[in-house]
Length: 109
Image (tube, rainbow, N blue to C red; front, side):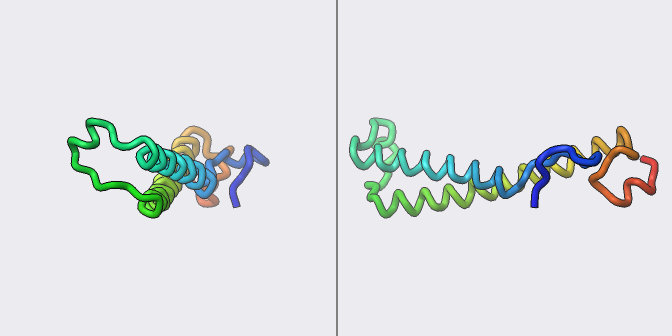
């Protein structure tokens, strides 16, 4: 699904699924640990001033799942954007060596 480096002149790309899962899982565990810290140690003074509701384990898990989804989408689209931009830059530099577009070989950019 995703290339693992340069093979036969192909462009090295980021895998959107891998980056999305990595960012999503990091944000999931960060929010889950933050929720557990609030449950066991209580709110800080700044949080009390913001009138936040009391967090339960179920609410913390739901918010962590939403963080997983948002992190996955963010990482996925960052990797896609990176692949598109890096391919366009590389095709402009050396069209013969670029393996990212089939039509790139026919045109001189």
